[in-house]
Image (spheres, rainbow, N blue to C red):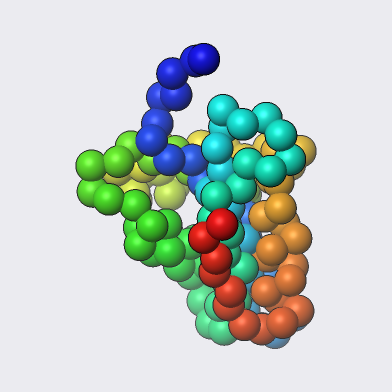
Length: 124
């Protein structure tokens, strides 16, 4: 079995919500060594009332920070064209671009939060 480069792996997808300035975010922690459909360890579906997608990314990072310890190495895949800016803002994480076909359940979680206008988190 191949040794993983990081201790924890997360995906983040942000999406605009219907209201002005609102946004939603889907977060998924996954096990990259498990190639089955059942590799999700944690998920979050978060609604942001004000601040747009920038605030959604900040909230996603805060949510991830509550799930990890300070000594863990974390890889985050983030959708959007400006992922490299967040890499500079949060240098403690390895933030890279999330390709569309690799988003897992994150897009659905973000869309669901925008529809519900509430937040749900769950460790599986």
